[in-house]
Length: 429
Image (cartoon, rainbow, N blue to C red):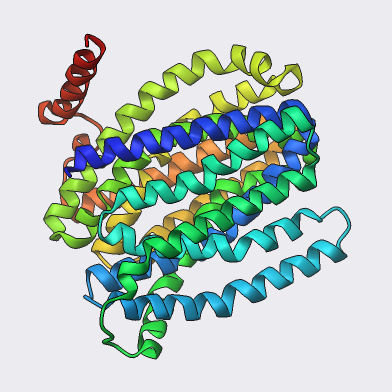
């Protein structure tokens, strides 16, 4: 399967998952209001932040498997050892905090979902190294689409309460973990090679750097969410979460190509990886730019109609986020080049840290004056600055002309022409 075909398949799967996610968000907002939406978004953001703090394990597995030629069965055993020592204690701590701290009962739901979420996430290292986007897509569809398909009718028809919603949410991660177990069977059959103790140390050493970068990067993505939660309250967060959800929807246009190109960037020569990185960046930029134009004009009038008048400010939030969304749509590909090809995960960590600090400071200063729009402004400014620095370093390292990162060539347009032609042929029967 070619890179274009993998990207298209990944794109379709992500759009399907995102469509379900948006539909679920609309139903939650309509049935539970801004407060219920805010609590659910808070739990989801917290779980995602913990996942990002453990994202280095999947990256380390990809690196060990693709670049160090380690036996997958050995890597799988090392992965399980690490997860057992991290996921269960973290889940217990979250459950205790949720039970002991007033107003933090959502932490209990996060604790129950956490072990299953981390297991499914870590296993993606094998699938990414093999460029097996189909397994990745199915895994994410099981976790995302199945959950929404269950809780939407429960909310609409049975007027389900927030605790039942959380139970269904947890069930989605359990289902995803079960599917992952079956997908990993072929990796478990390989013969043993390197002792697991050495692989555990190797995973922790390499993955720790990636995890730190991922945690900082996600904090950069969500520091505005947590600050709004604690400075303005869960109702304000409920409105803000709609705005960032609309903005981040645009990332679904760029992430499929970054995922499909992961194997090429990780396994190829530096010149091949640099070329693939530049190709992904310019495709991402153009696609997200076109999507941003649509969001800019349609989000403000449509948000009150779809979500209700109480969410109207979310339309303005999504508009203010657009420059940052466009800039950061290209960052995952750059991070893959720095970490997987160069073997230097500290490089994206530096850029993420700068962005996070900027976002936090500007958010604290802007919220009292601009409300939730101040959070969007801080996010957009910090993203643009961090991306500019990362892109400048990439250009300096690879000597690739800056215009190649943003301008499509004729050969870049061929897959789109083929797709349009195929679509027209299908429509014509």
